[in-house]
Length: 244
Length: 388
Image (cartoon, rainbow over the protein chains, first blue to last red):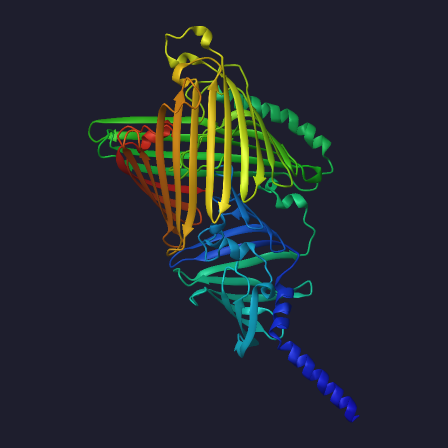
Protein backbone atom coordinates (compact mmCIF):
# COMPACT_ATOMS: atom_id res chain seq x y z
CA UNK A 1 0.00 0.00 0.00
CA UNK A 2 2.82 2.35 0.94
CA UNK A 3 4.48 1.50 -2.36
CA UNK A 4 1.27 2.27 -4.26
CA UNK A 5 0.91 5.65 -2.58
CA UNK A 6 4.55 6.45 -3.39
CA UNK A 7 4.04 5.58 -7.07
CA UNK A 8 0.83 7.65 -7.14
CA UNK A 9 2.57 10.62 -5.56
CA UNK A 10 5.50 10.28 -7.95
CA UNK A 11 3.10 10.21 -10.91
CA UNK A 12 1.23 13.22 -9.58
CA UNK A 13 4.51 15.09 -9.23
CA UNK A 14 5.54 14.24 -12.78
CA UNK A 15 2.13 15.29 -14.12
CA UNK A 16 2.21 18.56 -12.19
CA UNK A 17 5.75 19.27 -13.29
CA UNK A 18 4.82 18.56 -16.92
CA UNK A 19 1.80 20.81 -16.70
CA UNK A 20 4.07 23.63 -15.62
CA UNK A 21 6.62 22.97 -18.31
CA UNK A 22 6.40 26.12 -20.47
CA UNK A 23 7.20 24.21 -23.64
CA UNK A 24 4.38 21.78 -22.98
CA UNK A 25 1.96 24.59 -22.11
CA UNK A 26 2.86 26.39 -25.31
CA UNK A 27 2.46 23.14 -27.20
CA UNK A 28 -1.08 22.81 -25.85
CA UNK A 29 -1.78 26.44 -26.74
CA UNK A 30 -0.56 25.73 -30.28
CA UNK A 31 -2.81 22.68 -30.49
CA UNK A 32 -5.76 24.91 -29.67
CA UNK A 33 -4.88 27.84 -31.92
CA UNK A 34 -3.08 26.33 -34.90
CA UNK A 35 -4.42 23.97 -37.49
CA UNK A 36 -3.41 22.41 -40.79
CA UNK A 37 -6.10 24.53 -42.40
CA UNK A 38 -8.75 27.03 -41.34
CA UNK A 39 -11.77 28.37 -43.20
CA UNK A 40 -13.35 31.30 -41.45
CA UNK A 41 -15.81 34.14 -41.84
CA UNK A 42 -15.01 37.09 -39.68
CA UNK A 43 -16.05 40.60 -38.86
CA UNK A 44 -13.62 43.37 -38.04
CA UNK A 45 -14.78 46.46 -36.19
CA UNK A 46 -12.31 49.34 -36.08
CA UNK A 47 -13.14 51.71 -33.23
CA UNK A 48 -12.09 55.35 -33.50
CA UNK A 49 -12.66 58.19 -31.07
CA UNK A 50 -16.07 59.05 -32.54
CA UNK A 51 -16.72 56.62 -35.39
CA UNK A 52 -16.25 52.98 -36.15
CA UNK A 53 -15.84 50.97 -39.34
CA UNK A 54 -16.98 47.41 -39.93
CA UNK A 55 -15.54 44.98 -42.47
CA UNK A 56 -16.40 41.37 -43.12
CA UNK A 57 -14.16 38.82 -44.79
CA UNK A 58 -13.90 35.20 -45.82
CA UNK A 59 -10.47 33.68 -45.19
CA UNK A 60 -8.77 30.37 -45.90
CA UNK A 61 -5.39 29.55 -44.40
CA UNK A 62 -3.18 26.51 -44.70
CA UNK A 63 -0.37 26.13 -42.18
CA UNK A 64 1.79 29.20 -41.76
CA UNK A 65 2.63 29.72 -45.42
CA UNK A 66 -0.60 30.05 -47.37
CA UNK A 67 -3.51 32.40 -46.83
CA UNK A 68 -6.32 33.78 -48.94
CA UNK A 69 -8.78 36.50 -47.87
CA UNK A 70 -11.72 38.02 -49.70
CA UNK A 71 -13.44 41.12 -48.30
CA UNK A 72 -17.23 40.92 -48.41
CA UNK A 73 -18.12 44.36 -47.04
CA UNK A 74 -18.29 47.38 -46.90
CA UNK A 75 -19.35 48.10 -50.48
CA UNK A 76 -16.17 50.06 -51.17
CA UNK A 77 -13.91 47.11 -50.30
CA UNK A 78 -16.15 44.26 -51.44
CA UNK A 79 -14.28 41.98 -53.79
CA UNK A 80 -10.80 43.00 -52.60
CA UNK A 81 -8.74 39.82 -52.39
CA UNK A 82 -5.39 39.04 -50.88
CA UNK A 83 -3.20 36.02 -51.41
CA UNK A 84 -0.15 35.23 -49.32
CA UNK A 85 2.21 32.45 -50.34
CA UNK A 86 5.16 32.17 -47.99
CA UNK A 87 6.65 35.68 -48.07
CA UNK A 88 4.90 36.87 -51.22
CA UNK A 89 1.67 38.83 -51.06
CA UNK A 90 -0.66 39.83 -53.87
CA UNK A 91 -3.68 42.07 -53.72
CA UNK A 92 -6.53 42.24 -56.21
CA UNK A 93 -8.56 45.43 -56.19
CA UNK A 94 -11.92 45.42 -57.98
CA UNK A 95 -11.82 49.20 -58.46
CA UNK A 96 -8.73 48.88 -60.64
CA UNK A 97 -9.34 45.24 -61.72
CA UNK A 98 -5.63 44.79 -61.22
CA UNK A 99 -3.54 42.34 -59.24
CA UNK A 100 -0.47 43.89 -57.67
CA UNK A 101 2.36 42.17 -55.88
CA UNK A 102 2.76 43.85 -52.51
CA UNK A 103 6.25 44.24 -51.14
CA UNK A 104 7.06 42.22 -48.01
CA UNK A 105 7.57 45.32 -45.89
CA UNK A 106 3.83 45.95 -46.19
CA UNK A 107 3.08 42.82 -44.17
CA UNK A 108 3.70 44.68 -40.93
CA UNK A 109 1.55 47.64 -41.91
CA UNK A 110 -2.02 48.27 -40.84
CA UNK A 111 -4.64 46.14 -42.54
CA UNK A 112 -7.42 48.31 -43.99
CA UNK A 113 -6.71 51.00 -41.38
CA UNK A 114 -7.23 48.64 -38.44
CA UNK A 115 -5.05 47.81 -35.43
CA UNK A 116 -4.14 44.51 -37.09
CA UNK A 117 -1.30 44.09 -39.54
CA UNK A 118 -1.48 41.87 -42.62
CA UNK A 119 0.83 39.53 -40.72
CA UNK A 120 -1.48 39.41 -37.68
CA UNK A 121 -4.42 38.17 -39.72
CA UNK A 122 -2.69 36.05 -42.31
CA UNK A 123 -0.18 34.16 -40.19
CA UNK A 124 -0.76 30.99 -38.23
CA UNK A 125 2.72 30.15 -37.02
CA UNK A 126 3.15 27.99 -33.93
CA UNK A 127 4.31 29.88 -30.84
CA UNK A 128 6.60 27.01 -29.85
CA UNK A 129 8.47 27.31 -33.15
CA UNK A 130 8.96 31.05 -32.76
CA UNK A 131 9.52 31.66 -29.07
CA UNK A 132 11.38 30.46 -26.00
CA UNK A 133 9.04 30.57 -23.03
CA UNK A 134 9.34 30.91 -19.26
CA UNK A 135 6.57 30.96 -16.66
CA UNK A 136 6.94 34.21 -14.78
CA UNK A 137 3.98 33.83 -12.43
CA UNK A 138 0.31 33.08 -11.96
CA UNK A 139 -2.63 35.51 -11.98
CA UNK A 140 -6.39 35.48 -12.12
CA UNK A 141 -7.93 37.09 -15.18
CA UNK A 142 -11.70 37.32 -15.69
CA UNK A 143 -12.08 34.80 -12.84
CA UNK A 144 -9.85 32.32 -14.65
CA UNK A 145 -6.58 31.09 -13.14
CA UNK A 146 -3.78 31.82 -15.58
CA UNK A 147 -0.11 31.14 -16.11
CA UNK A 148 1.75 34.34 -16.93
CA UNK A 149 4.41 33.51 -19.49
CA UNK A 150 7.23 35.55 -20.98
CA UNK A 151 8.07 34.63 -24.56
CA UNK A 152 11.24 35.69 -26.38
CA UNK A 153 11.86 35.15 -30.08
CA UNK A 154 14.23 32.36 -31.06
CA UNK A 155 13.98 33.00 -34.82
CA UNK A 156 14.87 36.29 -36.58
CA UNK A 157 11.85 36.74 -38.89
CA UNK A 158 9.25 37.26 -36.20
CA UNK A 159 6.80 40.17 -36.13
CA UNK A 160 7.06 40.73 -32.36
CA UNK A 161 10.33 40.08 -30.56
CA UNK A 162 8.77 39.37 -27.19
CA UNK A 163 5.38 38.59 -25.79
CA UNK A 164 3.76 38.36 -22.37
CA UNK A 165 0.79 36.02 -22.39
CA UNK A 166 -1.82 35.02 -19.84
CA UNK A 167 -2.75 31.38 -20.46
CA UNK A 168 -5.94 29.93 -18.99
CA UNK A 169 -4.70 27.02 -16.79
CA UNK A 170 -7.69 24.82 -17.48
CA UNK A 171 -8.34 25.42 -21.17
CA UNK A 172 -4.74 26.25 -22.14
CA UNK A 173 -5.73 29.19 -24.29
CA UNK A 174 -4.32 32.73 -24.04
CA UNK A 175 -6.73 35.30 -22.61
CA UNK A 176 -4.43 38.26 -22.97
CA UNK A 177 -1.25 39.03 -24.90
CA UNK A 178 1.17 41.96 -24.77
CA UNK A 179 3.35 42.20 -27.86
CA UNK A 180 6.62 44.12 -27.80
CA UNK A 181 9.42 45.05 -30.19
CA UNK A 182 13.11 44.29 -29.77
CA UNK A 183 13.63 47.54 -27.87
CA UNK A 184 11.13 46.32 -25.31
CA UNK A 185 8.54 48.90 -26.34
CA UNK A 186 4.98 47.65 -26.06
CA UNK A 187 3.41 47.63 -29.54
CA UNK A 188 0.05 45.92 -29.20
CA UNK A 189 -2.11 44.14 -26.72
CA UNK A 190 -4.70 41.55 -27.53
CA UNK A 191 -7.63 40.48 -25.38
CA UNK A 192 -9.09 37.10 -26.30
CA UNK A 193 -12.62 36.21 -25.25
CA UNK A 194 -15.76 34.24 -26.10
CA UNK A 195 -13.77 31.00 -25.85
CA UNK A 196 -15.67 28.15 -27.49
CA UNK A 197 -15.12 24.42 -27.76
CA UNK A 198 -14.82 23.49 -31.43
CA UNK A 199 -13.64 20.08 -32.69
CA UNK A 200 -11.86 19.10 -29.46
CA UNK A 201 -10.08 22.41 -29.14
CA UNK A 202 -10.69 25.69 -27.36
CA UNK A 203 -10.73 28.74 -29.63
CA UNK A 204 -11.30 32.47 -28.97
CA UNK A 205 -14.14 33.76 -31.14
CA UNK A 206 -13.43 37.38 -30.29
CA UNK A 207 -10.10 39.16 -30.20
CA UNK A 208 -9.54 42.83 -29.47
CA UNK A 209 -6.31 44.19 -30.93
CA UNK A 210 -5.04 47.51 -29.66
CA UNK A 211 -2.11 49.14 -31.35
CA UNK A 212 -0.75 51.27 -28.51
CA UNK A 213 0.74 53.74 -31.00
CA UNK A 214 -2.70 54.55 -32.43
CA UNK A 215 -5.71 56.43 -31.15
CA UNK A 216 -9.04 54.75 -30.64
CA UNK A 217 -10.35 51.79 -28.72
CA UNK A 218 -8.72 49.14 -30.87
CA UNK A 219 -10.11 46.68 -33.35
CA UNK A 220 -12.41 43.77 -32.62
CA UNK A 221 -11.83 40.72 -34.78
CA UNK A 222 -14.89 38.54 -34.37
CA UNK A 223 -14.93 35.02 -35.79
CA UNK A 224 -18.43 34.33 -37.07
CA UNK A 225 -17.75 30.78 -38.21
CA UNK A 226 -14.66 28.61 -38.37
CA UNK A 227 -13.77 25.17 -39.66
CA UNK A 228 -10.50 23.41 -38.93
CA UNK A 229 -8.48 20.91 -40.94
CA UNK A 230 -10.70 20.88 -43.98
CA UNK A 231 -9.27 19.81 -47.36
CA UNK A 232 -8.52 22.89 -49.47
CA UNK A 233 -8.32 22.60 -53.29
CA UNK A 234 -4.86 23.47 -54.64
CA UNK A 235 -6.09 26.24 -56.92
CA UNK A 236 -7.28 28.32 -53.93
CA UNK A 237 -3.68 29.16 -53.14
CA UNK A 238 -2.77 30.39 -56.59
CA UNK A 239 -3.31 33.65 -58.43
CA UNK A 240 -6.33 32.03 -60.05
CA UNK A 241 -8.20 32.93 -56.85
CA UNK A 242 -7.50 36.60 -57.40
CA UNK A 243 -9.54 36.89 -60.55
CA UNK A 244 -12.64 39.02 -60.25
CA UNK B 1 -23.57 53.48 -80.96
CA UNK B 2 -22.19 52.15 -77.67
CA UNK B 3 -25.73 51.62 -76.41
CA UNK B 4 -26.41 49.48 -79.50
CA UNK B 5 -23.41 47.35 -78.54
CA UNK B 6 -24.79 46.95 -75.01
CA UNK B 7 -28.19 45.99 -76.41
CA UNK B 8 -26.56 43.40 -78.65
CA UNK B 9 -24.60 42.12 -75.66
CA UNK B 10 -27.78 41.78 -73.57
CA UNK B 11 -29.63 40.03 -76.39
CA UNK B 12 -26.70 37.66 -76.83
CA UNK B 13 -26.74 36.81 -73.14
CA UNK B 14 -30.50 36.51 -73.17
CA UNK B 15 -30.13 33.84 -75.84
CA UNK B 16 -27.22 32.02 -74.21
CA UNK B 17 -28.49 32.02 -70.63
CA UNK B 18 -31.45 29.63 -71.06
CA UNK B 19 -29.18 27.20 -72.93
CA UNK B 20 -26.64 27.23 -70.12
CA UNK B 21 -29.38 26.90 -67.50
CA UNK B 22 -30.83 23.90 -69.31
CA UNK B 23 -27.42 22.25 -69.45
CA UNK B 24 -26.77 22.75 -65.77
CA UNK B 25 -29.94 21.53 -64.10
CA UNK B 26 -27.95 19.82 -61.34
CA UNK B 27 -26.33 23.04 -60.16
CA UNK B 28 -26.35 23.49 -56.40
CA UNK B 29 -25.61 27.11 -55.44
CA UNK B 30 -28.37 29.59 -56.24
CA UNK B 31 -28.14 32.27 -58.90
CA UNK B 32 -27.47 35.70 -57.50
CA UNK B 33 -28.28 39.21 -58.59
CA UNK B 34 -26.50 42.12 -57.00
CA UNK B 35 -27.16 45.80 -57.48
CA UNK B 36 -24.48 48.17 -56.26
CA UNK B 37 -23.20 51.57 -57.19
CA UNK B 38 -21.03 54.53 -56.47
CA UNK B 39 -22.31 58.08 -56.19
CA UNK B 40 -19.80 60.90 -56.02
CA UNK B 41 -20.03 64.64 -55.94
CA UNK B 42 -17.32 67.25 -56.08
CA UNK B 43 -16.67 70.96 -55.94
CA UNK B 44 -13.56 72.47 -57.41
CA UNK B 45 -12.04 75.94 -57.25
CA UNK B 46 -9.28 77.05 -59.62
CA UNK B 47 -8.31 80.67 -58.92
CA UNK B 48 -6.27 81.21 -62.11
CA UNK B 49 -8.25 79.44 -64.83
CA UNK B 50 -11.77 80.28 -65.99
CA UNK B 51 -14.27 79.01 -65.11
CA UNK B 52 -12.93 79.19 -61.59
CA UNK B 53 -15.67 77.16 -59.95
CA UNK B 54 -16.88 73.68 -60.90
CA UNK B 55 -19.56 71.44 -59.43
CA UNK B 56 -20.08 67.91 -60.56
CA UNK B 57 -21.71 64.61 -59.77
CA UNK B 58 -21.34 61.08 -61.06
CA UNK B 59 -23.29 57.89 -60.51
CA UNK B 60 -22.11 54.45 -61.56
CA UNK B 61 -24.93 51.94 -61.06
CA UNK B 62 -23.77 48.35 -61.42
CA UNK B 63 -25.68 45.11 -61.87
CA UNK B 64 -24.02 41.73 -61.42
CA UNK B 65 -25.56 38.36 -62.09
CA UNK B 66 -23.94 35.05 -61.17
CA UNK B 67 -25.02 31.65 -62.37
CA UNK B 68 -22.95 28.95 -60.63
CA UNK B 69 -22.42 25.85 -62.75
CA UNK B 70 -21.26 22.35 -61.95
CA UNK B 71 -17.69 21.65 -60.78
CA UNK B 72 -17.16 25.14 -59.40
CA UNK B 73 -17.61 26.75 -62.81
CA UNK B 74 -19.40 30.04 -63.09
CA UNK B 75 -21.18 32.12 -65.67
CA UNK B 76 -21.59 35.76 -64.69
CA UNK B 77 -22.05 39.17 -66.16
CA UNK B 78 -21.66 42.76 -65.16
CA UNK B 79 -23.28 45.82 -66.59
CA UNK B 80 -22.76 49.37 -65.41
CA UNK B 81 -23.17 52.90 -66.69
CA UNK B 82 -21.29 56.13 -66.15
CA UNK B 83 -23.82 58.92 -65.58
CA UNK B 84 -22.26 62.28 -64.93
CA UNK B 85 -22.88 65.98 -65.12
CA UNK B 86 -20.73 68.96 -64.30
CA UNK B 87 -21.05 72.70 -64.45
CA UNK B 88 -18.39 75.38 -64.50
CA UNK B 89 -19.42 78.89 -63.65
CA UNK B 90 -18.03 82.39 -63.80
CA UNK B 91 -19.98 84.27 -61.09
CA UNK B 92 -22.51 86.79 -62.50
CA UNK B 93 -21.31 86.04 -66.03
CA UNK B 94 -21.67 82.62 -67.59
CA UNK B 95 -22.26 78.94 -66.94
CA UNK B 96 -20.77 75.95 -68.75
CA UNK B 97 -22.43 72.61 -68.31
CA UNK B 98 -21.79 69.16 -69.61
CA UNK B 99 -23.29 65.77 -68.96
CA UNK B 100 -23.38 62.32 -70.44
CA UNK B 101 -24.64 58.80 -69.94
CA UNK B 102 -22.43 56.12 -71.37
CA UNK B 103 -21.91 52.40 -70.83
CA UNK B 104 -19.09 51.77 -68.37
CA UNK B 105 -18.85 47.98 -68.30
CA UNK B 106 -20.90 45.32 -70.10
CA UNK B 107 -19.31 41.92 -70.08
CA UNK B 108 -20.19 38.26 -69.78
CA UNK B 109 -17.77 35.69 -68.44
CA UNK B 110 -17.38 31.96 -68.18
CA UNK B 111 -14.85 30.90 -65.56
CA UNK B 112 -13.49 27.70 -64.10
CA UNK B 113 -11.00 27.14 -61.29
CA UNK B 114 -7.98 28.14 -63.36
CA UNK B 115 -9.34 29.94 -66.39
CA UNK B 116 -11.75 32.60 -67.46
CA UNK B 117 -13.03 33.96 -70.73
CA UNK B 118 -14.67 37.37 -70.72
CA UNK B 119 -16.42 39.13 -73.60
CA UNK B 120 -17.76 42.66 -73.89
CA UNK B 121 -16.89 46.11 -72.62
CA UNK B 122 -14.28 45.52 -69.95
CA UNK B 123 -11.21 46.86 -68.25
CA UNK B 124 -7.94 45.21 -69.25
CA UNK B 125 -4.85 46.36 -67.43
CA UNK B 126 -1.61 44.90 -66.25
CA UNK B 127 1.98 45.79 -65.43
CA UNK B 128 4.05 46.68 -62.42
CA UNK B 129 4.44 50.46 -62.58
CA UNK B 130 2.27 52.68 -60.40
CA UNK B 131 2.54 56.27 -61.69
CA UNK B 132 4.11 56.18 -65.16
CA UNK B 133 2.84 53.06 -66.88
CA UNK B 134 4.29 52.21 -70.30
CA UNK B 135 1.95 49.19 -70.27
CA UNK B 136 -1.12 51.40 -69.96
CA UNK B 137 -2.26 49.99 -73.29
CA UNK B 138 -6.03 49.69 -72.75
CA UNK B 139 -6.94 51.84 -69.74
CA UNK B 140 -6.34 55.43 -68.73
CA UNK B 141 -6.27 55.42 -64.94
CA UNK B 142 -4.81 58.51 -63.37
CA UNK B 143 -2.91 57.66 -60.17
CA UNK B 144 -4.12 60.93 -58.65
CA UNK B 145 -7.80 60.12 -59.26
CA UNK B 146 -9.20 58.76 -55.96
CA UNK B 147 -11.94 56.89 -57.84
CA UNK B 148 -9.53 55.23 -60.28
CA UNK B 149 -12.05 55.53 -63.09
CA UNK B 150 -11.26 54.45 -66.62
CA UNK B 151 -13.29 53.62 -69.70
CA UNK B 152 -13.28 50.00 -70.79
CA UNK B 153 -12.50 48.45 -74.14
CA UNK B 154 -14.65 46.15 -76.29
CA UNK B 155 -13.03 42.79 -76.66
CA UNK B 156 -12.58 39.18 -75.72
CA UNK B 157 -10.11 38.21 -72.99
CA UNK B 158 -8.93 34.72 -72.08
CA UNK B 159 -6.82 34.11 -68.98
CA UNK B 160 -5.32 30.87 -67.70
CA UNK B 161 -3.56 30.52 -64.34
CA UNK B 162 -1.01 27.78 -63.75
CA UNK B 163 -0.48 26.29 -60.29
CA UNK B 164 3.01 27.87 -60.03
CA UNK B 165 1.34 31.30 -60.53
CA UNK B 166 2.46 31.68 -64.12
CA UNK B 167 -0.46 33.06 -66.10
CA UNK B 168 -1.32 33.43 -69.75
CA UNK B 169 -3.52 36.16 -71.25
CA UNK B 170 -4.84 36.26 -74.81
CA UNK B 171 -7.08 39.00 -76.14
CA UNK B 172 -8.70 40.40 -79.20
CA UNK B 173 -10.26 43.85 -79.32
CA UNK B 174 -12.79 45.10 -81.81
CA UNK B 175 -14.94 48.18 -82.26
CA UNK B 176 -12.94 50.66 -80.19
CA UNK B 177 -13.11 53.95 -82.05
CA UNK B 178 -11.34 56.12 -79.51
CA UNK B 179 -7.68 56.05 -78.63
CA UNK B 180 -6.89 53.86 -75.64
CA UNK B 181 -4.34 54.34 -72.90
CA UNK B 182 -1.26 56.13 -74.23
CA UNK B 183 -2.16 55.69 -77.89
CA UNK B 184 -1.69 58.63 -80.25
CA UNK B 185 -3.49 57.07 -83.24
CA UNK B 186 -6.92 55.53 -83.63
CA UNK B 187 -7.19 51.91 -84.62
CA UNK B 188 -8.06 51.24 -88.27
CA UNK B 189 -11.82 50.73 -88.24
CA UNK B 190 -13.10 47.20 -88.70
CA UNK B 191 -9.81 45.48 -88.06
CA UNK B 192 -9.45 43.46 -84.87
CA UNK B 193 -6.52 43.96 -82.53
CA UNK B 194 -4.83 40.92 -81.05
CA UNK B 195 -2.33 40.33 -78.30
CA UNK B 196 -1.23 38.30 -75.34
CA UNK B 197 0.81 38.24 -72.19
CA UNK B 198 2.66 35.59 -70.25
CA UNK B 199 3.73 36.20 -66.68
CA UNK B 200 6.21 33.89 -64.97
CA UNK B 201 7.46 33.60 -61.40
CA UNK B 202 11.15 34.46 -61.00
CA UNK B 203 13.29 34.40 -57.84
CA UNK B 204 11.92 37.06 -55.45
CA UNK B 205 9.23 38.19 -57.84
CA UNK B 206 7.63 37.84 -61.24
CA UNK B 207 8.32 38.87 -64.83
CA UNK B 208 6.09 39.18 -67.88
CA UNK B 209 6.26 39.56 -71.63
CA UNK B 210 3.36 41.26 -73.48
CA UNK B 211 2.62 41.71 -77.17
CA UNK B 212 -0.09 43.59 -79.07
CA UNK B 213 -0.76 44.05 -82.77
CA UNK B 214 -3.19 46.41 -84.47
CA UNK B 215 -3.60 48.45 -87.63
CA UNK B 216 -3.72 52.19 -87.22
CA UNK B 217 -4.90 55.16 -89.24
CA UNK B 218 -2.09 57.56 -89.99
CA UNK B 219 -4.27 60.62 -90.61
CA UNK B 220 -3.27 61.82 -87.22
CA UNK B 221 0.24 62.55 -88.45
CA UNK B 222 -0.82 65.28 -90.91
CA UNK B 223 -2.69 65.87 -94.11
CA UNK B 224 0.41 65.65 -96.31
CA UNK B 225 0.52 61.88 -95.86
CA UNK B 226 -1.03 59.78 -98.63
CA UNK B 227 -4.34 58.07 -97.82
CA UNK B 228 -2.92 54.60 -98.40
CA UNK B 229 -1.06 55.05 -95.12
CA UNK B 230 -4.27 54.11 -93.37
CA UNK B 231 -4.05 50.62 -91.96
CA UNK B 232 -0.38 50.66 -90.98
CA UNK B 233 0.62 47.70 -88.83
CA UNK B 234 1.70 48.53 -85.28
CA UNK B 235 3.58 46.06 -83.09
CA UNK B 236 3.95 46.60 -79.37
CA UNK B 237 6.25 44.62 -77.13
CA UNK B 238 6.30 44.99 -73.36
CA UNK B 239 8.51 43.60 -70.62
CA UNK B 240 7.90 44.06 -66.90
CA UNK B 241 9.54 42.73 -63.78
CA UNK B 242 8.54 43.11 -60.13
CA UNK B 243 10.88 42.04 -57.32
CA UNK B 244 10.59 42.08 -53.55
CA UNK B 245 14.10 42.40 -52.10
CA UNK B 246 13.46 44.14 -48.77
CA UNK B 247 12.37 47.11 -50.88
CA UNK B 248 10.00 46.65 -53.81
CA UNK B 249 11.67 47.08 -57.20
CA UNK B 250 10.08 47.13 -60.65
CA UNK B 251 10.84 47.85 -64.26
CA UNK B 252 8.37 48.24 -67.11
CA UNK B 253 9.47 48.78 -70.71
CA UNK B 254 7.67 48.92 -74.04
CA UNK B 255 8.67 49.27 -77.68
CA UNK B 256 6.08 50.32 -80.26
CA UNK B 257 7.09 49.86 -83.89
CA UNK B 258 5.16 50.95 -87.00
CA UNK B 259 5.58 48.84 -90.13
CA UNK B 260 6.01 51.93 -92.35
CA UNK B 261 8.41 54.81 -92.00
CA UNK B 262 6.47 57.50 -90.15
CA UNK B 263 9.42 59.68 -89.21
CA UNK B 264 10.10 60.08 -85.53
CA UNK B 265 6.92 58.14 -84.70
CA UNK B 266 8.19 54.95 -86.39
CA UNK B 267 9.65 53.69 -83.13
CA UNK B 268 8.60 54.68 -79.63
CA UNK B 269 10.20 53.32 -76.49
CA UNK B 270 9.20 53.83 -72.87
CA UNK B 271 10.89 52.72 -69.68
CA UNK B 272 9.88 53.07 -66.03
CA UNK B 273 12.05 52.06 -63.10
CA UNK B 274 10.43 52.13 -59.68
CA UNK B 275 10.87 51.32 -56.03
CA UNK B 276 8.76 51.43 -52.86
CA UNK B 277 9.28 51.03 -49.16
CA UNK B 278 7.34 51.67 -45.98
CA UNK B 279 9.42 53.38 -43.32
CA UNK B 280 8.74 52.63 -39.66
CA UNK B 281 8.05 56.28 -38.89
CA UNK B 282 4.95 56.96 -36.80
CA UNK B 283 2.08 54.98 -38.29
CA UNK B 284 4.22 53.93 -41.29
CA UNK B 285 5.32 56.24 -44.08
CA UNK B 286 4.96 54.69 -47.53
CA UNK B 287 7.28 55.97 -50.26
CA UNK B 288 7.09 55.20 -53.98
CA UNK B 289 9.55 56.55 -56.53
CA UNK B 290 9.47 56.14 -60.30
CA UNK B 291 11.71 57.37 -63.10
CA UNK B 292 10.24 57.40 -66.61
CA UNK B 293 11.99 57.85 -69.97
CA UNK B 294 10.26 58.19 -73.34
CA UNK B 295 12.01 58.29 -76.68
CA UNK B 296 10.82 58.20 -80.29
CA UNK B 297 12.73 58.17 -83.54
CA UNK B 298 12.83 56.80 -87.07
CA UNK B 299 15.47 54.34 -85.87
CA UNK B 300 14.71 52.11 -82.93
CA UNK B 301 16.49 52.93 -79.66
CA UNK B 302 18.19 56.00 -81.17
CA UNK B 303 17.52 57.92 -77.93
CA UNK B 304 17.55 61.27 -79.79
CA UNK B 305 14.12 62.65 -78.86
CA UNK B 306 13.71 61.86 -75.20
CA UNK B 307 11.42 62.97 -72.41
CA UNK B 308 12.16 62.31 -68.80
CA UNK B 309 9.82 62.37 -65.81
CA UNK B 310 10.35 61.59 -62.14
CA UNK B 311 7.54 60.82 -59.72
CA UNK B 312 7.46 60.49 -55.97
CA UNK B 313 4.45 59.50 -53.89
CA UNK B 314 4.18 59.57 -50.11
CA UNK B 315 1.36 58.02 -48.12
CA UNK B 316 0.85 58.36 -44.38
CA UNK B 317 -2.07 57.09 -42.26
CA UNK B 318 -2.83 59.96 -39.88
CA UNK B 319 -5.36 57.97 -37.86
CA UNK B 320 -7.31 54.74 -38.27
CA UNK B 321 -9.68 56.62 -40.59
CA UNK B 322 -7.54 59.33 -42.18
CA UNK B 323 -4.81 59.10 -44.75
CA UNK B 324 -2.65 61.78 -46.34
CA UNK B 325 -1.16 61.15 -49.78
CA UNK B 326 1.05 63.37 -51.88
CA UNK B 327 2.14 62.87 -55.47
CA UNK B 328 4.86 64.98 -57.08
CA UNK B 329 5.93 64.71 -60.72
CA UNK B 330 8.86 66.55 -62.24
CA UNK B 331 9.14 67.04 -65.99
CA UNK B 332 12.88 67.36 -66.67
CA UNK B 333 12.44 68.54 -70.29
CA UNK B 334 10.09 71.42 -69.52
CA UNK B 335 11.51 71.90 -66.01
CA UNK B 336 8.01 71.86 -64.56
CA UNK B 337 6.74 70.38 -61.33
CA UNK B 338 3.29 68.89 -60.64
CA UNK B 339 2.21 68.82 -57.00
CA UNK B 340 -0.81 67.02 -55.61
CA UNK B 341 -2.03 66.25 -52.07
CA UNK B 342 -5.09 64.28 -50.98
CA UNK B 343 -6.44 63.98 -47.44
CA UNK B 344 -8.88 61.09 -47.24
CA UNK B 345 -11.32 60.15 -44.49
CA UNK B 346 -12.85 56.69 -44.75
CA UNK B 347 -16.09 55.74 -43.03
CA UNK B 348 -18.27 52.66 -43.52
CA UNK B 349 -20.11 53.90 -46.60
CA UNK B 350 -18.75 57.39 -47.21
CA UNK B 351 -15.31 58.57 -48.21
CA UNK B 352 -14.33 62.23 -48.07
CA UNK B 353 -11.45 63.78 -49.99
CA UNK B 354 -9.86 67.19 -49.84
CA UNK B 355 -7.42 67.55 -52.71
CA UNK B 356 -5.06 70.39 -53.47
CA UNK B 357 -2.83 70.71 -56.51
CA UNK B 358 -0.34 73.10 -58.01
CA UNK B 359 0.46 72.28 -61.61
CA UNK B 360 1.43 74.13 -64.80
CA UNK B 361 -1.55 75.72 -66.55
CA UNK B 362 -1.16 73.29 -69.42
CA UNK B 363 -0.65 69.65 -68.49
CA UNK B 364 2.06 68.20 -70.73
CA UNK B 365 2.52 64.82 -69.13
CA UNK B 366 2.82 62.21 -71.85
CA UNK B 367 1.88 59.48 -69.39
CA UNK B 368 -1.53 60.95 -68.57
CA UNK B 369 -4.66 61.17 -70.64
CA UNK B 370 -6.76 64.28 -71.23
CA UNK B 371 -8.63 63.89 -67.94
CA UNK B 372 -5.48 65.23 -66.29
CA UNK B 373 -6.42 68.67 -67.60
CA UNK B 374 -8.93 68.81 -64.78
CA UNK B 375 -5.87 69.22 -62.53
CA UNK B 376 -4.34 72.01 -64.64
CA UNK B 377 -3.16 75.11 -62.83
CA UNK B 378 -3.61 75.33 -59.11
CA UNK B 379 -6.74 74.66 -57.13
CA UNK B 380 -8.58 72.66 -54.53
CA UNK B 381 -11.22 69.98 -54.92
CA UNK B 382 -13.62 68.54 -52.36
CA UNK B 383 -15.16 65.16 -53.06
CA UNK B 384 -17.68 62.94 -51.30
CA UNK B 385 -18.11 59.33 -52.39
CA UNK B 386 -20.91 57.01 -51.34
CA UNK B 387 -20.72 53.30 -52.13
CA UNK B 388 -23.75 51.06 -51.81
